[in-house]
Length: 249
Image (cartoon, rainbow, N blue to C red; front, side):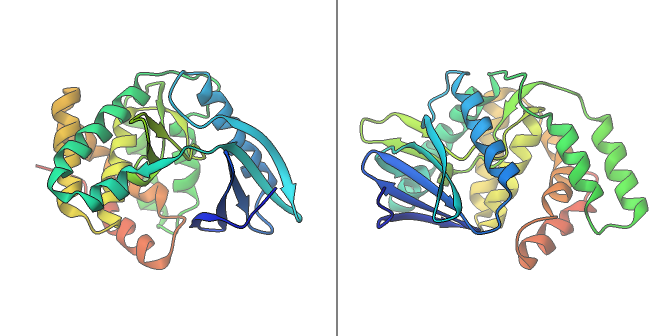
């Protein structure tokens, strides 16, 4: 197994290519449970029929956990958007179509989104009153069982050389309310500094899916709070600033 070609570096993870295999190597001390959970998520999503790289094995390389999957040759949607800004609307329309296809699937074995968010809200540094309000709002949101990616953004979409789109990185996958997944994608655009893209994405999703924008917006403080327990200080500050936003027009 050759680890001499790095194709991506993320928080405590490095992704290598070895021929037709993609090897995600986790940093030392990375939770075994989290690695196995990610692999299990990916295997379960394979069963939904979505286009994703198939998992090949879970192994250890020089004392570090690694997940080996198919390598998909192509460019990410983020790369294509950066190279062809004039067609941003078309790319975001494709992003929305792919996400709606994800939401059309069910996978009963996945963890429930509401349970995961509730645990994360409990881990935040907010005062007891704010946490209580967030838990109450979360519990009051409709319960669904749609597949939710949890980190759906253009960098997690690979367009293969034949034009086939593949969705990668299923470590955060759950089953739940699709609008929570949409709120997460909207905030990811914001975190990347693409406010115009965020608004274009949300408007496109709501138009294509027939979803009221206000409904997605009600999820944003809840999603922001649940995501604020990770990431760097700047990201946490940004996400925490959304938590106090209650009403949208």
